[in-house]
Each structure stands twice: as C-alpha cells, then as structure tokens.
Image 1 (cartoon, rainbow over the protein chains, first blue to last red):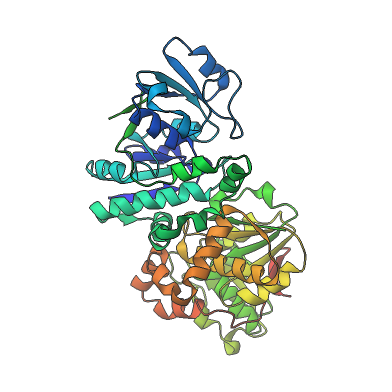
Image 2: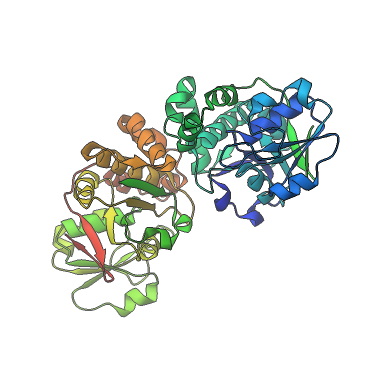
Length: 234
Length: 234
C-alpha cells in the first residue's frame, strides 16, 4: 500500500489515478467548506467549474456558494467562508459550489476508484476510513492557481501522518516530505503557514478567522465522497 | 528578486525560464561529478542525452563518463561516481558525460539566461556568485526518473538558504519549504535522506561512499556554468 502526493492540480496525471483512492485537498477553503456544510446537514454538494453552470442549477432548495479571487461571486448566496455554512442556513439544502482551485482538483481526479474530500477538520476520521480499502492512495493538493501551496501541503502531511498511525504504508519521497514536515512542526503549524503566499493573501483580504477555523484538526467526523457529480457524506 | 523551485524535470515549463538564472541540481550524483571533475582540472564537460552521442565524441583527450540505472555504461571510462574523477585522471581532459536525470535537466533549461550546476559541494560559493546578477533564480531539481527526489530537494534547500544569507529574496511556497526543511534539519540531513528512495537504491547497489562524499557542504569553490553545449568553470 503506497501513498503518493501531487503538489498541485497541474502535476496530476489523470491516467495514474486509475484504481486509486484519491483525497482532494483545498484546505483554504473549498474542502473545509464542503466538510463543514455536510457536517451541518447539507444534503449534497455539486461542484461546478463555471459560474454560469452554478446559476443554471439554482432552485428553491439550493444554495449557491463559492469564490473568485477569494471573494463572493455576484448573485451567489454564500462566499467560500466555512463560517457561513451553519446548520440553520444549510441543513436540508443542496449546495452548488464553484471555486478556483478545489473544484478543478475534484474534476481532474474523476478517473480514480473513489474520491474523498480532505481537510484538517476531518483528517483523522478520513484517514482511518480510507485505509480500510487496502488500496494505493493518491493525495491531490489543489494548490493555488496551479501552483504548489504550503497550506494544502501541510494538510496532506497531516493526512499521511494519520494514515501511518493506522497502518505503516510506503511513501513516495514527496509524501514522506509532507509527513516529516507535519510531524516535526505540528505544534507550530502557523509558523509554516506564514510562508504560504495564499495564507498571506487571505490575511490581506481580512480572512483570518477562516484560516483559524480551517486549521483546527479532527473536529468534524464527516467523510465526504464524490460520485457522479455530487459530494455526499458517507 | 525571487527564487522558484521545480521539484523535477517534468514540472519545468521551458518558457518560464526565459531571462532567469537557473541552477540545475542532481546531487546524487551527476552535478556532484561535474563540480568535482572541473575542480580537479577537467577542461570542460559535455553533457549528452544518449550513449551513442557520447561514443561518437570520444577522442585522445576525452574521458567518457556516466550511468544508466546508477551503473557504469559498457565501453565508458568512468561511472557516475565523483570519487573516480581525481586530479590524476581528469586534469587537462574533456569529459563527455551522460546520465539519466541530470543531463536532461540541463538540456531542459537551455532557454534561460544562464545555467549553473549546483551541488552540496559548491552550494555556498555558487549562491554568493549568482546573487550578484540581481535576477530571478529558478532552481531545477533533476529528480529521479521524472519524479521528485528528496536528495535534490535538500540540496535545493541548502542553496536557497545560502542565497538568503547574502540577500533576502522572495520565495515561492515550494522554495520556502526547501529553505525551512534545510534550516530545521541541517545538522541531521541523513535522517531525511533515509526517506529518499534514490538514496536507498544507491545504498542497495553499494554506493554509500558516494553519498557521503556528495553530501559534504561547501568544500569546492568551483562554479560550473553551461554554455553552448559545454560546462566550464567560471
């Protein structure tokens, strides 16, 4: 059983994902939103690439959420802040969701055996669940605009760490790097985050509370799975 | 002034390297061999992709060196071990050199402004020299068979660290990761190397002495530069 890690969407070779278990990470903030929304009773999340697709899917029981350049999209209900997706707002609703990086990573992973959504919030629960399949695992970091992003990498390290706690697995050099970076710095992750350009951008547009929320570990036992265009809780 | 870092040859976008200073790293062992040979008086190193090209360039004053799968090539004078390139063997000679990963990384970087050859052996001297150009720097890790390799990454971290000692530069998330990994583990680099699959392969084929040699820091003040198909000492 082997864990490989892709630093960003552009590095993913779709053919290589066949028959693998994929975990998609866009920790700031798409996959944290998806995990939170489903935890709070959202029926399903429909990730779409384009704003027009999202608008076309709106109906009575639908919430439109997402971002462009980190900000709320005109005509949408919610932005990409997980703090907006509270139980009173999202329970029993469908969420149509479009973000710059996370959505693309999910679509790019579509040829794999199963696609799960990972975040700091659900890392431990997700890791324990996916190890049971006994298959090779590919972690796909969304990255920021097609480029490696430190925030996703740290979350990947956390997930590799949790998988290794359950079962010792073979690691590629890159997944080993994520693992080592996480275990050696887990008590001071924010020091590393300072070097993440995406983190600095989010701070600059006033999203510090979102960052603090997204970097809480293992607080939600929700395991989102993507199938046939929809993400549901398992 | 910005430092970007490519984890492996396949991730390099040739167009992006235009007008940049490139440092190519294949620390185990191609760029360590090149640095050592030039330090020991080799006139020039001619990197070629194919074995046949190398054989066609042989003449009285030429040494053929390189590897396939880490081993010496049939009909060649030397393997890819830097320990073979001693002053008595290489001084005043031309070296025609072909390796699996390093040669490819050099060729792939050909559209940049200048291409330097980096290793642990010359890291500090190289860093101090290239900072003076005041241009953006791209570090290209050769990787192993097109895949990220921990050994090259650690050497990249060392070079980013040495550049930062001379001048504080902007780092991409990935070059910051290399920088942080190096500074936090520089007194115990071998612990990280254990996770490098290429390192484990080299140990398995009996090349421990080569590894120890290649991970010595700042012992050679040679700065190899590639131009018009040849690598010479500046």
